[in-house]
Image (cartoon, rainbow, N blue to C red):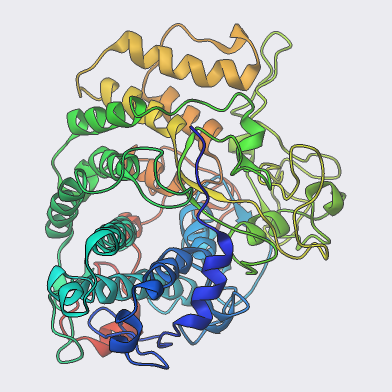
Length: 530
């Protein structure tokens, strides 16, 4: 089956059709204001898809004008504050998978793991997350059955509006899942909360987990069947995948292991009609939306219509520099920022002359050792995301500034990895099936059976996740789950700010609530250690 495509031009059109409030304060309870009233927007069903697109595009773009212009949150550059850009940075720069050469503001504090509650990059993602929640709450609030009926929206249009509403609920859950992972505790509001009267209450991590579980299980039966929605829009498989990831990390979030549930929901995804793409590299190209039966949920980009300096534009430009040829990656220049550490390069040894094709590093003119984080030629860039198509042609932006490459939030490969890990952690299932799934990934990586393994353990799974999912914004969460993020049992260059790495405080498993929001909302409590 071929996906219909959630047209990227809808994202751009929605920015001018419905212009929302810019704020750097808490938007959870605040109705996004518009140039026209909500009543006039929602009175016409033809506006609904554009408003829904704004919720989706909030992860892809940063503002109302040209992608990053007139940004949704203030106090930081629009392109810098982009949701996926900051999600990538908080999940990758704090680990062995990525360092960045730039000294902008408090950015170096991420890799050295010395950040504070005033770190502007942490605050940017925090406000992005809750701005998204506010947008979703408003859409859900305005599309109840009662309001649809009052606006004479009925029949097929009403059915479609309900589907949009349920997708907005998924998008809200996705952002709340980022909140529980990154911040643990935080403000909480739904469409039922009073708007603009009192600051939202604080919800503890375990409570938020219970809410997310209940909300996602409710959505299981409400969204479209796997692979029947437009590409880039949520369906049941996206719900199953998010539940599986939530359960995989439940012991961290709540203190109670839920590995059996993680396995069960991974199985649902695996049985959902998806298949591994034969060529691993094609998952990360400018036309990775085509013939892609592996990606379950993506954040869509287009160099013509979704012009942002965040997202995959950031990942590709920032990881290009030194002796690298930008044109070979479909861009006009490199920004000389992102590289990985020797820990990641060491995960890709040649075996009997066979090479793991996932280990694509630029090494010419680069040093394996990182002696100075600010020197781009120290460390190997990962050449994974590219703005070129399978035929070698660049993406749609002739100037080479912006890219077409979609960011894969969920892939079938990760469902295989979750299944295997859950089995090893006592979640039931079959050891033989777990091994089979791992070897399917390795057969694709090597192009033959030479990479097959005869047994697996948890340390192997952590390494395999890095090989398969590097720079897909999962590494911090993985290291925390495996007890290696803050401890001295696993070190990488400049962990803790020293060349050979050192243990850091356990409280850094959570990011701080931004000081600005603590001042704005008396219901909030800072995470310990900050």
